[in-house]
Structures are given as C-alpha cells and as structure tokens.
Image 1 (tube, helix red, strand yellow):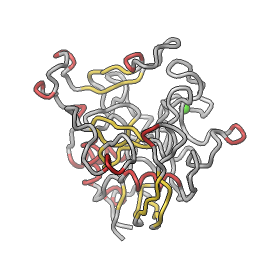
Image 2 (spheres, helix red, strand yellow):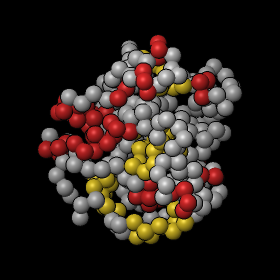
Image 3 (cartoon, helix red, strand yellow):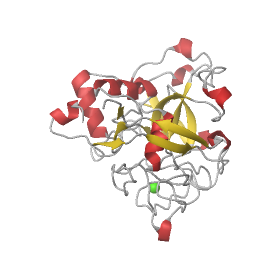
Length: 302
Ligand SMILES: [Ca+2]
C-alpha cells in the first residue's frame, strides 16, 4: 500500500483493495435518478476502510494551514441574491424540529450558521474534542479534494464508490442485503423514527458515530452507507441514462455545479429519505458544507 502522511505520524490509515470486476450499478426500485440498472466494469483500486475522521483532518490542517471553504469570507458577486448578513463564514447545521413539519421545506431543519466549521460542526460553542474518531463533516467539495491531494490520493468516482459499497453482493438494496434491519439489528447509522423530529436512536447514535462502529461489508469497508454522505468526483446527472452522463454537469443551468454524493447519512429516515443504500445518489452543490457530508479517498496505484 502506498505511503501516507498520517501513517508516518504513527496513526496508520487502513485501505482495502477492491479487485477489478463488473457489477450491476443503480437500482430500478427506489428513486428515479438511480435508474436504470446497468452493468459497469471497474478497475481494481485501494479505498479507505473508513471515512476520513476529524482527527485525520486535523492533522491535515495542522500540516498545511489549510482553511476550509466554510471558514472563508464569501464573495458577494457569487451570491447576488443572498442576504448580505448571511455572507459570513459558516455552514449548514441541522436542528430537529419540535414536531412534524412540512417535509418539502428543508428550512424546517437546516439553518445557515455563522462560525460552523469542521472543528465546530454545530457552530460557536460546539467542538469536536470527543469526536476525533467521527467522520469529518462541514467540508465542501474542494476541501475533500485538497485533503485527498495532500494524502497523495483522490476522491472515488461514483462507480468505484458504489462497487466498493456493495461489498461483492449483487443487486442488493442495502450494503448487507435486502432487509432494512435483519432480526431488528441496525447495521448502519441512519435515522429511526419520524424525520426530522423523532430520533429514536435505535442504532445508538443521534448524530454521527465513530467510524467503524457498525459491521464492515464484504470488502472490509465500514460506514459506506449511513453516518455521513461521501463526496465523489463525478458531476451530478439526473439519471444513469447515457445521454445525460457524458455532457458535463447536469446542473449547468444552475450557478453552482453539483457533484454526486453517495451513501446517505445519520439524517436519512425511511419515512423521508431511504438513501443509506449503495445505489442511492444525490447532487450536492460544490460549495455546500453540512453536518452530514464527509468523504473517503481512493488510491488507484497498483
Ligand atoms: Ca442514528
């Protein structure tokens, strides 16, 4: 396995080898943008066994002095329609509602929070002292890219990510099979109960969880689904149809390009967002930092 800056500091970063092969990508059974199921060939590659943690990201920041997008002042010319008071460094923070709310309005649970960042994920007053082994969050796409470059790695393509997430299983709904909770056991950190107000925490975690807290998949990879969404290096397209996959970002009519994120998060509830599955995908604006998106890296060296 290639050398890695973190390994040199005595904190080994484990990667697993995913062998070359073909798999059925996508799903015809859930959301339209996962269709159609199609066969894809993938070269072999190394991938982080776990999402990049707060502790790993802290070493990167210490080593490079890197300032994440959420910590930088915003350029008003890029956000002509924004309230000037909101053009201060910050990020999106989730707050549960007191009861059932209109699920079509994300403002009912997301709020732009000045001062929120990877080290203060819920804003000033919050910290990550006890979350060094949790996945780093509040990282925009370019932050994930910068970390990967520092580590001598790259972000996975959507196909690499999904192939890895399936762990060798073919066409299954979840990373572990077709059952949501076999014999009542929660096999990923998602949201049980009614989103966004009733977090039953049957999996033991209200927010993010330490990486590796749930069973690894067939390739030895943990937290591929649930816990945090993960950035991939592919521009978002509204489906797997060939005509939409070769023409650049499907979000070309929007000011901010979107990239594909995969895996769902601790905020995915079956009543609202059944996306803690290998086939699930979402387009996320590259400048978005939130408390439920992180990443892991790949290395395509032999
Ligand atoms: Ca949970």
